[in-house]
Image 1 (tube, one colour):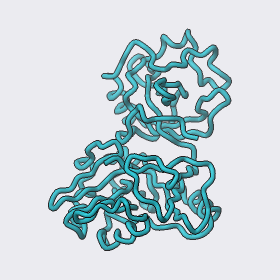
Image 2 (cartoon, rainbow, N blue to C red):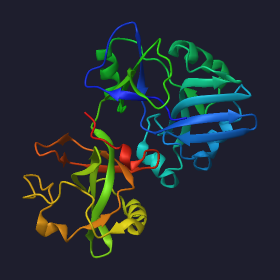
Image 3 (cartoon, rainbow, N blue to C red):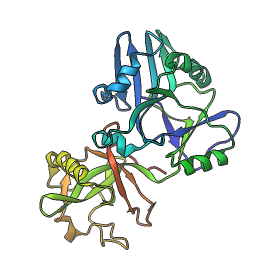
Image 4 (cartoon, rainbow, N blue to C red):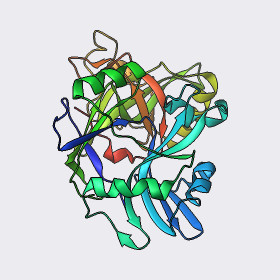
Amino acid sequence: MIPMAAQPVDKLPEGDAWLYEPKLDGYRALLIKEGEQVQILSRNEKELTRMYPTVAAAGLRLKADQATLDGEIVALTQDGRPSFQALQHRSSHPEHQIVFYAFDLLHLDGKDLTGEPLMQRRARLPKVVGKDVTIRLTRDLPGSVAAIVRTLKAAGIEGVVAKRKDSPYQPGERSNDWVKLKLERQQEFVIGGYRPAGGAGLDALLVGYYEGKSLLFAGKVRAGFIPHVRREVLEKLRPLATSQSPFANLPDESSGHWGGGITADQMAEMQWTKPQLVAQIRFTEWTADSRLRHAAFLGLRTDKSATDVKREP
């Protein structure tokens, strides 16, 4: 089953028909228990069970013979904040706790709950989860939209999700019944190449997004790397090397005011790759020529297919 998705918005709806919850910076996943077997699947149906053994073990402790939970795998810092970079590079952050925040219950002991209203599904979750410290419940946020946004911004939380209380669960759909507002600029981008450094290194990633079937170049990403992460990314990119640029809108006529473009002369300096890897990128804004400004690498994503990556509003 492909999880239901939220529609990006630039203004959240307000009123008693909606509930609000934090948008956590992690991996969206389904946690599925079938008797003594537990499976964790990403939003593009990739197997994550072996990657998160503590979450899988907690799944066996669910108070049900069969259950399917929708939620987010998150790495928590010592002060309780989600960190995508710590989740991505767990070996470098052993002090961070990996948890699964559950926000929906789709199946329970043979019964399909997806047609029930959201609030009825969520009401069953506390009994199923119990008091486990690895599987936790996402709490509804009280107060006005303005107050919620102020609180989450101050806490460094990625965004807010608003959901209609009476909404059914629509697998694989990006519905207006669920909407999300990001509080900082970041999204997934497809890696289509890199600028080498010193002949064998990596100076900058070349990233873009799909518009229809065309991959459009969005900019270079140099910030956000530490040495071992840079090496790991380069090792994953080398087998994908190709001689042709995958970007439909290159070369540029000029490198642009902020140096975000790639001219015809600069094309030969780049190592192109097949557009298969997806990276999470933080940035300050889109420039007038549709390029990223002050972009920083946060990590690779294995839970989203490259062809699903679009420019978010």
